[in-house]
Image (cartoon, rainbow, N blue to C red; front, top):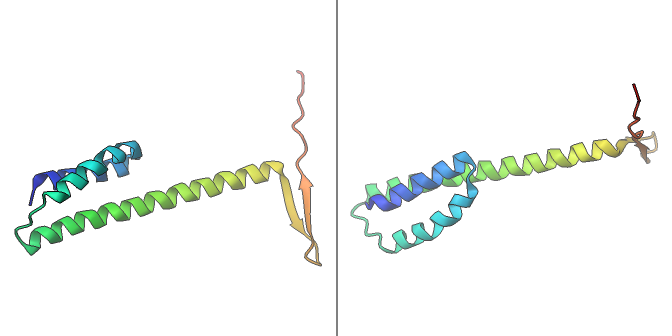
Length: 106
């Protein structure tokens, strides 16, 4: 199994774990080129490559989930700064605007 593909997959995992997503854009063309020259000599080698690729995919899925969660939380915080939303007994929505920040001179 060519070491280049293993090394590229390991570099990709390192970039994903470190959050260096810009580095991934540089590794993708290298991986594509290495894939073209791949001549596996056995099922064990293919299984090892598949395992590394699956680990990278799982890391990417986790990173995407984390980014979505962070964006959702930032949206919630922004909404909370606007005010409080409540519902009455009839289910009607009411927005209670946040009081503007008061400045005090000391």
